[in-house]
Length: 252
View 1 (cartoon, helix red, strand yellow):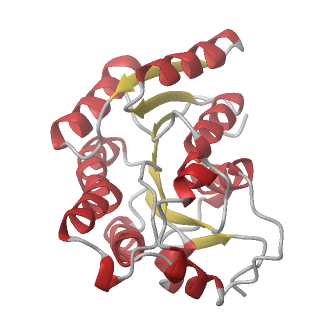
View 2 (tube, one colour):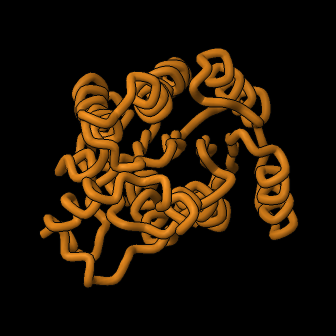
């Protein structure tokens, strides 16, 4: 019960890493506010958690819209009266588009979804965390943000998340609010199914893969959720502004 009595917002909770994080947080005693665009999947997850004795509520939202980010935060405050944890997990697939093949439209979509949305919801959440002088923000970045081993827009957005993580950590150091990042390596989710991989730029993906040891096991969504739990819980109460790579060592 490492999160007993805490309230957590988790974006992108309807599948993959967000889904597993929601289940784990609820099992650890957190009240979870789950946000995503797919209402049916969200509501099914809420039922699963509540039927197991947990406490969950769903908010159908598009985190690329500032108004929806405000809606998520207000729903958490209305339901539970506080926000202790924010997990910025929502994002879209990479597609490994190099700069000479990345359209302006794709650049804008990825930056809005994977970077600007984090600014929207984090800024809104901090208004309430500051009042309670406590909080943990966990940003789900990527090894692409650390090493640039992804498409140009995705690498830029995920790298920006790391910069935002450190910047927020500096601002709130010693004020009871921490901000850290988890950087997943290859992790099977709906974003990289065989159907999705067909949309990737295979030539550039293969170039990036040359800089990784892909013979090692893939991390699972559960592995990533456990890393997120560490940063969310008081076990990491002295840790802020840090990025944790979870990839079985494939980028060493």
